[in-house]
Image (cartoon, rainbow, N blue to C red; front, side, top):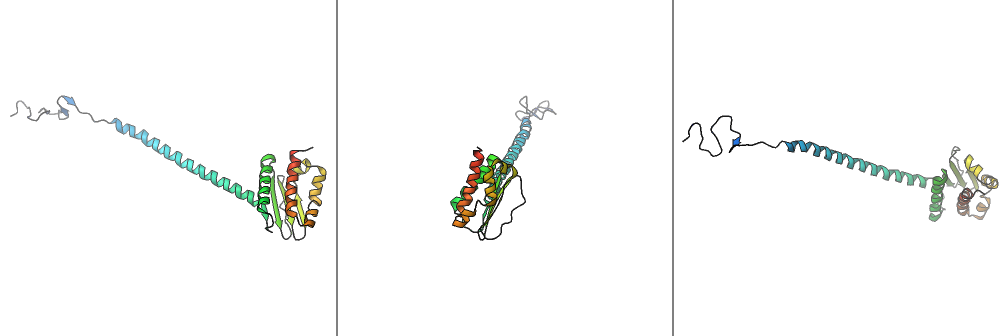
Length: 189
């Protein structure tokens, strides 16, 4: 059947050491696919890291904006509930415009009792109204006080709100006060 070590099986020569050959051609297994798998894995990991970082950034941005909105809403506190919603929105918008244009934070407290002003601050305009006794506390930052006309700064500190309290129209007086300050800053003549 076999001669001189030849086998009857096609493609097989009966010689030792030639077990990996078929019909005179050498079979080689492709090992380059495992080399390509490593860069694919790295790209997948990098893509996953980018997705995670993008998600973290989006949550951070969302919660930063949420904190900013809550902080701006917290800056205007009305214990009495007598400020109409449209006036509250206008005061918040004015406070945001003041912060963006001049770097001044507007804080307003309306209470039915005595108002405790915060520590004076070089960047905070504080307006506190005690509706029960008809008293107002206005703290102007030093630079803002110098930027306003002298008569307006003194009036705000002393008697600006008296006519509004007497007429029972302190919400209009509060809005007029903030609007007057913004107009005086925009037109310093």
